[in-house]
Image (cartoon, rainbow, N blue to C red; front, side, top):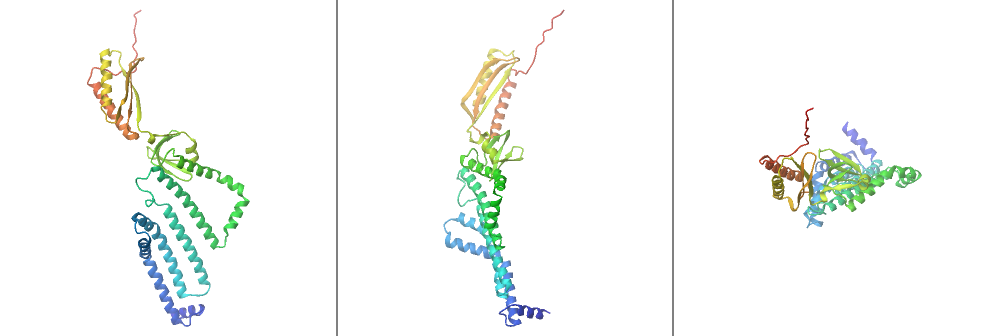
Length: 359
């Protein structure tokens, strides 16, 4: 049965003189396929290693980037070439060969596109380092997102070309409905342009802590259409770039310090001497913390409130990070509470005194 199959196969392929030659070709072709499929990753790594040694000797970061971006697409293309090579050995002529040529072209397009998308989606450690500004890193990441979309579009058009669908015809068809397409893409284009404004105007960058429309959080990513913010509770909010570009934004990361403006109420039974002691000790406690700008401290006896003597305290804390700022504020307030508890001074709360008159 196997011999008859070999004989029929030999008769269907031009250039094969006898079944024995067909059998030898079949064995060599299958062996080539098996070897390439089993060792495709090793072969790809060897090719990348050779390229690195010949052309990229002085940059280890570039070598690692090329290895990470090229090995998988190259492994895939080696499999495609193996299929082509095995077909050339087994059936060097006929309709199969023309179909395999199309397969190779498709494999090449996919491999190059795959490599390009991985490359533009990498961390760009071969171009930027840890000392690079956050703005540069954000710009590179944003532009890479645009390039990924462009590479995917070009590859899709080239694949359609292999199936006889001309890119010219596609654009011509789009031209007929150009107005509809323009309206459909209006928001996408506006968001993309707003993304460019954000990247180059830099009202905020990735890892900045910002506040917009009542939402506070850390910017985690700036994409072509949207900006993502991680809120304090861990949830992620996604804003269109047009909203981010047109809305008032408070960027807490850009500040070098945070201000505290708080009030203390002392009971009306507090004496003048006790008020003076409280103000003096309050200033000492606040100034003793290393994160406080001592020159910014302002403490005053402001007013006679409805139920308390109002003491105001204003000072700056050199901690732009909200969490560290809260830690410093907690330490200061605990120290103030400890002082009040150990003294004869009483903090006031809203009270009313009723005078009852007999008759």
